[in-house]
Length: 376
Image (tube, rainbow, N blue to C red; front, side, top):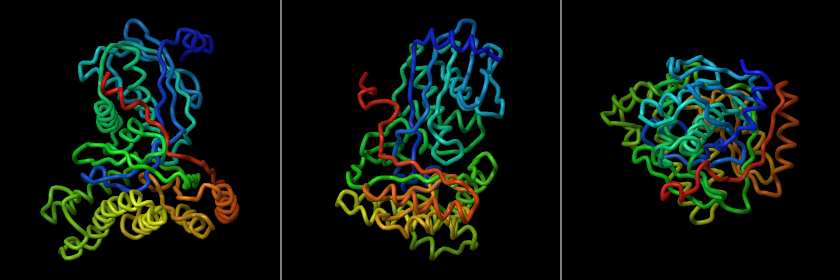
């Protein structure tokens, strides 16, 4: 472990820094690994990585939230430690496998993201590491290449079979725009977000941990449903075809959620382009109902938060965000109503559950890298 003196020396020697935002999923729940489409927003909250080069392959990782610094040597091979360090170590390992010339480094992380809230703190940690190392060492990767490398780190090193959503949202975010990701084409578009609306994220304080097996189980259930329908992925079918198919009840419910989410994303884009924010809110609430009834990735606490939110004046809709199984909801709220909505929801929720809900007022923010990065 590194001492406080060593941490101070590292800060003094700083020659690279990077910030990567968390993300909030607006629509497109569990569609990314099904070849589908997603709408998300990068947040102002995120992870900052600050540090310098080290000789002899030494790697030092420190976090203000996680105590002392961890010291390793990449010349001895980087192996999973089964803690928070797996995310940056996975990025370093994937860079090495790709042939990037990146040696030793010391890095200190600071996060403004609540851990376990479903706001992609892990992806922000990965992207911050990749961008930090790209500024520290002479290798060049496009924005999409960075997003894919970070996904690979989570798949192969951490052991979570996530799609591209979280990493792409962190990389490609733009102020006052939603990120539209086509996960099959691996392409991104920017969708303008109405200025009079805001995003209110409310953390249930029920921890969200995708490494627990539920996420991977849902993934396999989706793949099995697609195979039973004779399609490559659930992206390749429609709600009408699904309802006509002869599938076991559980498989049909899982598929109904994913297929419906793809359709809701396309409806939302049309509504946003037409200036109909109310329609987006309705689609978000419909998405949550599907999470409850079809995908079963909600919790009683998330359900309560959504019900309380949509009862409030100025709230147009709400849903769980991220993988589910705990974490946070996102509500679409008129800007001048955000504080009242949060106060009213928190008061009832805290009393009923014994948990303390935490709220975050957000706008769609900038990503880890600007658009002109790809022209550099």
